[in-house]
Structures are given as structure tokens and as C-alpha cells.
Amino acid sequence: MTWRGLLVTAATLVVLGGGGTVAWRHYEGTVDQMELLGDAARDRPPPREITIESAPRVGGSGRPSPFPASDQPGRNILLVGIDARPGEDQAGARADSIIVVHVSAGGDRAWLVSLPRDTRVEIPGHGTGKLNAAFAEGSREGGRAGGFALLATTVRRLTGLAFDAGAIIDFAGLRRIVDAVGGVDLCVDTQTVSVHIGWDAAGRQTAPFRLIPPTFRPERIAGARPQVYEVGCRHFAGWEALDYVRQRELLPDGDYGRQRHQQQLITALAHRVTSAGVLTSPLALNRTLTAVGESLTFDGNGRSVGDWLLLLRGLRPDAVTMLRTNGGKFNAANRNGTAYEQLDPVSTALFEAARADRLDAFAEAHPDWVIQPS
Image 1 (cartoon, one colour):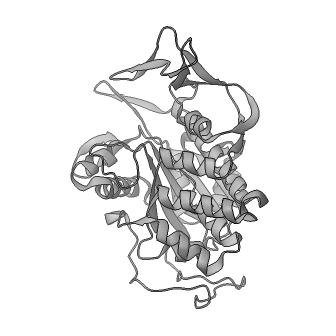
Image 2 (cartoon, rainbow, N blue to C red; image 1 turned 90 degrees about the horizontal axis):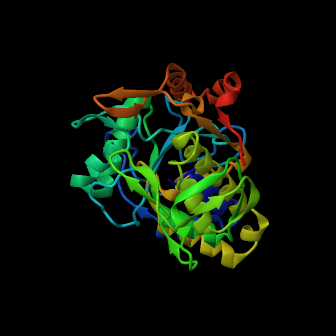
Image 3 (tube, rainbow, N blue to C red; image 1 turned 180 degrees about the vertical axis):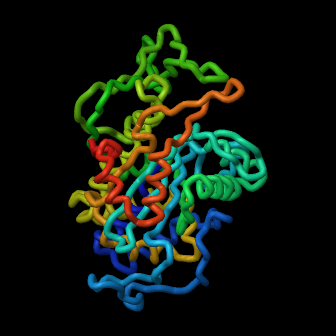
């Protein structure tokens, strides 16, 4: 799962936190950096050293930017969430969350679009399959970098978007980040029953369901009481937030509900890390920076983490809009006994708008495709 830009969140946190050059250089040193994008990358620029003091200034804002003008307006980031620890190349792992982030040409707006992981796609060199299988196929030979590269190439063919950066975050890392900021406030919009966490009669944690292949239908385990997240607003600890946003099997809208919850968590996390409780506390700031850095694998497409922090320094949490593909409704197809999701024509128009940096107009024309923060 992972997530709006934890990259965007980290950028906002470091730059708004007043850490300046020292802060973002410290953060950059904690991030696992490797080439991930492969053929999905926009033309890579030559490596160069950029500092806040020396970066060129663009536009009327006076803000420095290390990014020159591009023929394709705006910048695109591919975020992938996996259930593995940073540094572990688990062959065959599947991407659990796939999020496209489009940052406006001015760097002051961002748009998040979650792609259904069951989307039917052509995976280069591997025939037709589900979108999240691309990571698994690539990782078998190339580890997490190979998995990301094949997934990114598949997404580029699906959406027409070239990518300027990519990042992987693992579930355990997300929990560490939420705990580092002292938890988050979320509003549960529909009763959510956990298939992963429950309790036995003695109060010990246990799995309340077993997932039956090949469809992974949940089957209740006798004597186990599942964790239930009731409708309403409350504070979530890291383990609760992570469990909540992983659920899809028992939600009425399945993976679309999970996408909505994940994006709401990312928004809540962004508000939390930019709050005074974190930014004015050196210990909390350092704890959060460390948790973010240790949880990310990042490819800046020839640009450093510091360059990206500079680009995103004007981005605020309330300037991030979340969009749903297919309007959040199932558009299923069954091929040879396998159930797939497929993007509808309006979703195709959504990505056309992203290529033209016109997602504001798309959202205005399709307000029901916008996910409201919890």
C-alpha cells in the first residue's frame, strides 16, 4: 500500500520544517536510492549537485527549482507499496498498491490516482495478466529494482505517462512513520472488519479469517473475534492504521474502498507531519525523518532527493487532490475464468488530462471522481 506521496509528505516535512540544507541532506543520506524506472523514465538528465543557494529560480514565485522546462507539462511520480522490508529482494512479490502522482508544472498542486491492482494489462515479455503481477514477474530475475522497472513500463504503456521519479515503500515502514508522528486521526466511512487481526477467547492476537485460494475468499475461523473499525472519527496508532488500510475482502466496494482508505491515510499523515507537534519538536522531526528515510527506496531519475524537495517545497497537504479510476465503481471482465478489472473510457481521459497537466479541469468536470479527505 503505501502512498502519497510519502515522498510528497517527506518533502513538505523537511522543507517546511525549517531544516534547510542540513535537514534535507540528512534525509537524503537515509534513503535507499537505486535505479528503478527503467524504460518508463523520462529522459534522464546528467547527475549534478544542487543546493538551495545555487538552484536556478523560475516563474514569478522566486522559488528555486533544479528542473528545467519540459515538453510534457508537470512531473509524474510512481509510488508502489509492497509487503516487504527495504533491502529485501523477495522474488515473486506482488505490488499491493500502485499510485500515480502528477505534480503540476508550477509544483504547487498534486494529484493522486490509485490504479486497481487487478487491471488487465499487457506485461512486456510476459503476455496478459493483472497489473500487480508485473512487479512479481520482474522481481523474479531482477529483485525489487527489476520488479519496479517492469511494473513502471507496464503502467507507462497503460497510461501514456513517462515518470520522473519512483519510490517503493513497505507496510512495516508505513507503520513506523505513523508511530513516529504519534498516530493519525481518521474518520472511518464504512464499518471495516479486519481479515488479518483478531483475538481469541483469552485476548491473544490471532488471525480471524483464512483466505481460500485461488480467489482468496475469506473464511471465518471459529473462536476468533476480528478487529472491527466502526464508523466515526478517532485516533489511530500505527498498527491500527496499517491494518485498516489493508482491508478489501469484506468491503462493499472491495479494492476501491481500500484505495480510498489508503489515500485518506496519506492525507491525514501529511497533515500530521506538517503540524506544530512535529515541526517544532527536534526529537519528533528527527524521528519522523529517520522513519521515512529508512522506509523508502527511491529513484529520482537523475535528480537527487534534495532536488525533489526543492521542487515540492511549495506543496501543501490541502493542495493534493485524490482521484479514483472508473469513478470508484467496478468495471469487471472475465477472461478464461479469471476476473480482471479494466479501465473505462473516462479513466483513459483522466490520464490524457494528466499528460496535458489539465487534471484540474478533469476534476471540475467529474466531481464524483474526487475522493474527499476523511
